[in-house]
Length: 419
Image 1 (cartoon, rainbow, N blue to C red):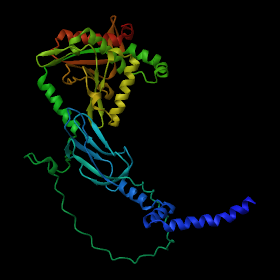
Image 2 (tube, helix red, strand yellow):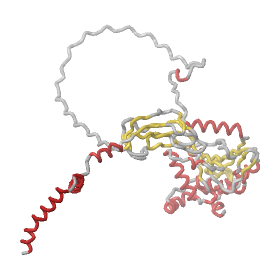
Image 3 (cartoon, helix red, strand yellow):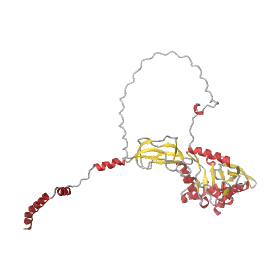
Image 4 (cartoon, rainbow, N blue to C red):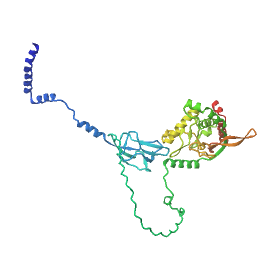
């Protein structure tokens, strides 16, 4: 019964509402129509957002360090039209001390390269323009292999008339030697002119400044490597297992240098104008041959590190040098340098001081030589070591005692362990 009554009432209610809407003002009727109209989000809004994301972005040379105001474009890793992901290396810029990689800040397409290899550029110089956004292009499909052509029977060529034998050629004049009248080397056959890298220019300038500023003097000694080599052979596997780093000679020499520097602090000091700076710490610069030239990353706090910690830090610095990933802070704060020419089989040499430091220890190759021990001639693995020092600050006595302290530490490694 209730359902029947509701069915009879519904038409009257709907009719009344329809009449009410008809009597509303035109403005209200439009409002009601707007309410009844479903809201549909237009598709073109999404298309506009995608188009806006494809913006051009100009990437400039970022600030490098307080002491560096310019660099040289070393290599350009991508080309115009190439797709790059965020943080991909686009351009490598060589500075006085290291190579800085300029990465893509976002993913996108390289529209234009604004520099060329070899250009000298300052901070803030525009490097490249890229279009950010979009999607990476799909990998190009390899074309289907072309079917091989059917084999053709070789035809027998018709015999050719025999040409008359030409007369013998005149003898060629010997090549003239390179001119010595000032002709540019690039114009001489067999000579290639290559521009020096920024790092190599800096190394050349600093080494020459060091020679012209410091009063160089070098003292030598020789070290019997028997005990250190025996210790290394005996404990190298256990050392590697415990510390996850190989036991080499550099860690022991670095530790010996720290002990000697504490005994002879002038060797670890530096001249600053009319003052002398004595350091309570020992930060060792290690000469490493990198792909762009000689670099000297610093192992800081060697006086507080164990041999294992020094070996680990040396390995990390050497790897970063080979990969060109050394940062500015890796070069700061060195107080003395170790140069290991023995890696390349050097017998003896006189290293050059790395300013503003006052001394550099030169290691050399290990060679078996006859030596006199307790009145007998025996064959021992020997290494020559050299200490080049600035005689303006370091007296000969201090240099000789320093080198003897290094010798004692290497010939009796327990001396370093006991302190």
